[in-house]
Image 1 (tube, one colour):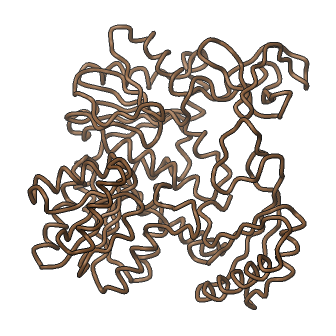
Image 2: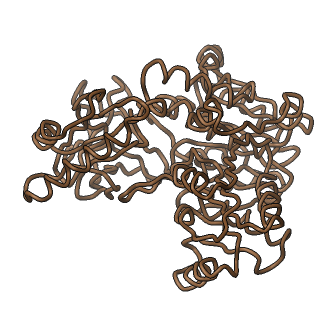
Length: 505
């Protein structure tokens, strides 16, 4: 389990590991979360090995090229593969190394049945093929910490002196600082953040990370702070560039909104998106170009000249020579999510953005707007993701949460879930939690459905089934048998079963 030093050199390190594996006469497989990361490893392998020595398996390549590459790997003419999630099944011959980068990224989890996670598949392949396993990241997941604690894997970490020499200076702005800051009460950014931007722009580009895309993704009553909801489907109202209110679920415009709680007609922004942030910063620094990177357009790189780069988490481009400074805004939006992994995921995203900033010796500064007493914020200040993961693992062990225990989720309408739980023959040590209403909005005709969402117009409940380590196979077999019997009878409402669900909250 490799905890990489800050900086964009991780792809070159992975390329060296692949080259060493090929030199030993065995094959190598590398899985990364997205096409941008795959492109960086592809460029590093090409520079180190030359053309034609490895295959790149990504969706961007198109079906014909991807199939040709797959056949080359299957026939053994190419023995090194780098790709995104689907590459975890690449038939590399005489496998000597499997590697995965940033296993905490949600892209590694397949949303369609049987819903494998790339990390779990590579762990199985490493055990079956008796080959090396390398899990690398700037941060550290609880699952990675468990691999080290169990003795299955060894830690590969730099000394504290090396980490301090490579990491930027991290400063925090908490609630107490905001209360004493006159500028922060009138604007989104506190004085410390403005100063960091101003100083950073003298020496290079500045990165601004905003948790939400769009303009004003969430609105609320300015008087009583009640969330602004659509009259048609109760979805959240969102502010658009032209000042128009539109429902985020059904897309219906709202021209005469008033608060049902207090009768007020004025709105305020609950959450400000990346486009609105870019607009505000553009007005504050009119002589500096502002670039945005997000869902609509993801930038791969930006030049090292002074500029403001506003990005959503995971879409941060690499700057030539590194960023001079970075602002991590609205930390509460990520830390406040009702999810077991909220703190771990927030720290992972913060460290990923901060790793692109120059070292403290080179003037690199990171300002995070979040309460400094919180554990993920302290881990970022100390640059200690491994310590944070170890403490999270210990707490989950006390509470019996994954990955210490094995868990399955059963979701559907209330009657179908109750019928399924009554029919399934669970292991003796199984514990059923719930069922409770699912923490997702009711699906509507105007909102794009994600995999696992309830059908339009249905409200689902979810039950969690927990067993101790060693009983995961028995739990999976029992759930499979009950689902098969239910499908054989035919009819009835749909019940979805997922083993090791990625979200517990």
